Length: 202
Image 1: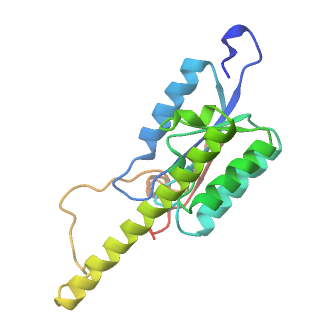
Image 2 (image 1 turned 30 degrees about the vertical axis):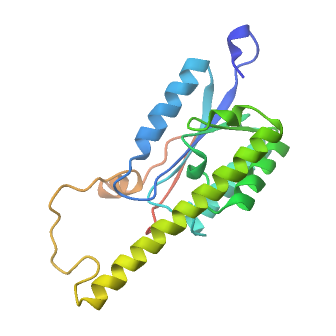
């Protein structure tokens, strides 16, 4: 995939997603940009989701994914690079493998920095995709179960649940992406970037 042999420059797109305020999409983006620079890839598009779960069926996620698949179909890039496959989806084996097949059909290679085996093909990749898809979905469900159990325990103990009226943050909150733009007026999206408003984590 490297153009160092004098072949045509590889045109890439990057996908970044975080599901909570405690995570920073810029960290993922910086690492991916370093990867592209080291290999001489040209970044044509950036698909970014802030505070959006990869497990839930949200309009923000679905719109971004549809836009990415449309761009792949129109040959806007030939490789999609992500930090990890669970940034693309946590919906399980069927959804992950289905997405990979769709990108394959469009001639787009999906590369995960955390799963270098994605650069290979064949039966090994199919097996690893199934394992990774199952693990991501299982972890997402466990997080949801622990959250619900914690809320149920607090309710049973008569303790407050959620942010209380008049509560003050003990530390400064991160204002990433879309939120930061709203604080300074109308939200702006850089050319070549796709970024949507955040939604509550589910």
